[in-house]
Image (tube, rainbow over the protein chains, first blue to last red):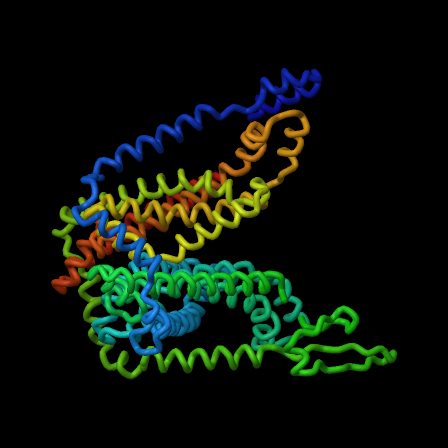
Length: 283
Length: 283
């Protein structure tokens, strides 16, 4: 390292021409070739399991069916008001996401405080971190399949699944917010003679609310997308009907479900990005 | 937060209904203070919660009543069937291979599209918004649904899963990347253009070095996510661990499921640590 610096100093002293300085530019070609080789090697290794057998007999029919379904959706289903109509199912999906996110956000608060190194001792904090990681690794579909034994099939299963699944990510982001707490504010409140309750009310809560709410809204965004797939295992929402229609090849119905889903997710994503931008600017 | 002087305060529809409070200061100046929006927001959230409870028929009593079933299930999960190890390895490696290849394809396709979708490099606003809209549409469709569609077209197996992961990664990487490209420093690019470099040369040597580390970091992040996501793709027949998870749950062999989840956990944690280490080096 010091040799490099010496070389650079010499170069500066000598007043090199542009061409000479350019010839001394840092080169990483060895590192780059290594990275490319590793990536190519990984690609080669992982493509060994791929068995491409061309399309299935009905493959082209399926592709055509999906395109025709999306271009000609079942309008009666799309705007129907009954229990099986798209609006009702979308509303139910949203209801699952709302409850799941709110329960998850509340459940994540104790987890986050217990796993923050600036509040708890290190062993306790790391223990809770492993627990959070454990919750996060189990796929949400598996959680749903386990909770279904408790609640039975239906939207309630989706709610409890999302409440548990959300804990992982939400508490991870809460922890970052808690560890970034400005402790000087707490010290000055201490110097003013505030009680513990006052310190929490005026020193901690104002620092955390914005980022907590922002995290929760972000998770709502994710949960809404997740809730659409939970239906596959029977946990309510639009997913069940969508997969049933796909498997029984009713393309027009598939089209109307997909349209409904896309519009809902796009609207929610747009709104959530706007609100989070406002929160980040402190309004 | 909401205290502003009357001269700069813009009245929104909210302030027209709930008139701001007028405060007269000691020196005779008048200033206004907006009414808090918190009660309105709280009321809306509460209404959403009540509606969601109705739609999902969620009640705590039923869950508390059947909670011992879950505990029983967890007890079995934490006593994994060790003899199962050799059977899990194959599908687990398949899952990792699927996510490696899918991530690679998705990221490779994502880079040029992300460049075309960033407004500071591509000055054609129509093309930029067209690409962004397509990316947004891709992101709205759940991975499982994409996987199911590919499984119907190309037959069951890892090929369909890889394609699904590639498409899903493409949507996310391209979005994250164009957001990062838009905040890079365009000064060097302009300087090189002023020196007579053409657009491609200027982009290659002024923008690429700024984009590349971010690109690699986003790709690694996606890979982390994909390992977790691809574990459940098998549920719809797209190869990997999901088939096994589905089977174990179907036969209520929770000890076997415990072994599958344990191995998935170990692999996910190992990959997460490795990728976090690499990402720290990149930034």
